[in-house]
Length: 69
Image (cartoon, rainbow, N blue to C red; front, side):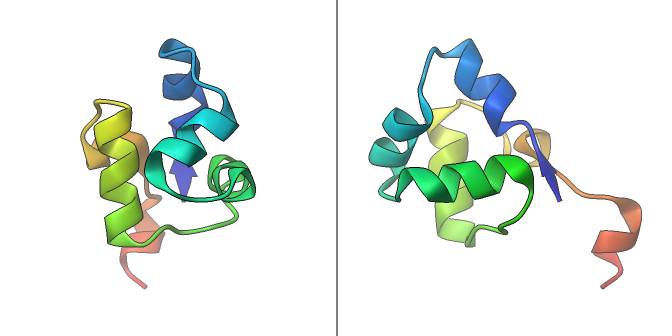
């Protein structure tokens, strides 16, 4: 899964550490999310979307074959 977290975080001038603090996770979690190496829980995904003022379908991008799994 790809994300636009890094792009939108930059738009709001947030560091990884600041976004992590706001959503209640460690900075490393944000790093892994931005790299596409971690799939967040629904609760975390919603928190990030709220902080970045972005709908979930615009923040997290799925490949067609990922939805078939």
